[in-house]
Length: 352
Image 1 (cartoon, one colour):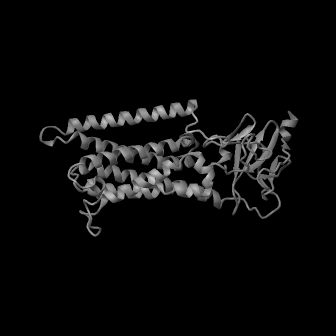
Image 2 (cartoon, one colour):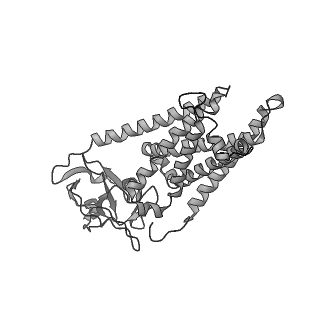
Image 3 (tube, helix red, strand yellow):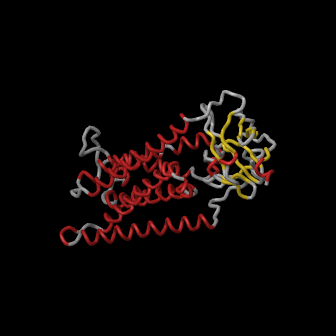
C-alpha cells in the first residue's frame, strides 16, 4: 500500500518466496558448474571464469523466461496468481544475474591491454551487415540497461509518482530486452557452439513464451467479445446463486472496463475490476477483513465505496446494483472513484 515507503516490506510470504528463489538460483549455478566440469575435461577443459560467465548468463535468461511466463499463466489459471505477488523480485534478480554476467565478461575479455574494458568488449565486433561479426555485445548491453531501468523503478515509490499507466508502459520494455537478449545469444555464443542443445532450448523457450501469450490473449479477447451489451440503463449479469460468499464475479461489458460484483455478509456491491496499483483483477480476489483484496499484491478497497481503508488513499469507481427475483442487475454507468453506494441486500440471506 502507499501510506509509507519502505525498501522492502517484509512479511512471511515474501521471506519464503525469496528464500525459495535464492535456493533455486544457487542450485542452478552449482549444477551448471558441476555439469560443465564433468563435460569439459582434458583437452576440452575451459576456464573457470568462462564457466561462471555462462552460468550467470544462462541463469539470467532462464529467469527472464519465468518472469515473462507468469503473466499469461495467471490469466489462464488462477493457480498461478500467487506467483505475481513478488514478480518484481524476480525481475530485479534477473538484472543482478545479468549484471554479474556482464562484469565477468568485462574482467575476462576486456581486462588485458591498455584499452578501456567497456570499449574493448563493445568494439570487438563492429560490422552491422555481417552475421558472424555483428556487434552482439551491444545488444546485450542495451538489454542490460533496460533491465536496470526496470529494476531501479520497481519500487512502489516510482509506481505512485510516475503514474500507473506510464509505469506499466515503461516496464513493457521487458519484451524489448528479451528480444535483444535472444539476438545477443543467437549472434554471439551460438555462432561457435557445436552442440544443438543450446539453440534447441532457446528456441523451445521462445516458442513456449509466444504460445502462452497468444493463448492467453485469445482467451481474454473471447471474454471481451462475449461481453454484455451495456447500452441499457440496467444489465442482467447473473443469478444471485452464481455469486460466492466473499468472492467476486467479473462482469465483462462491451466497450467498457470490467466490473467486479461481490457478495458478503448478506449484501451485494459492485466496483471496478481494475486495481489502482498495477491493474490487477480485483474480481479474482476475495474479501478479507471486510475489504476487497487484490490477488496480485494485496491492495484493498471497501466494497461499498471503492476506497482503500485509512490511512491509504486509493479510490476506484463504484457501480449501482439491484436484485429482481433471483437475478442481479448492474447499472453499467460507473460512479466517480470513491463514491459510496448503498449495498443491496441478498434476498437469499434474508430468507435464511
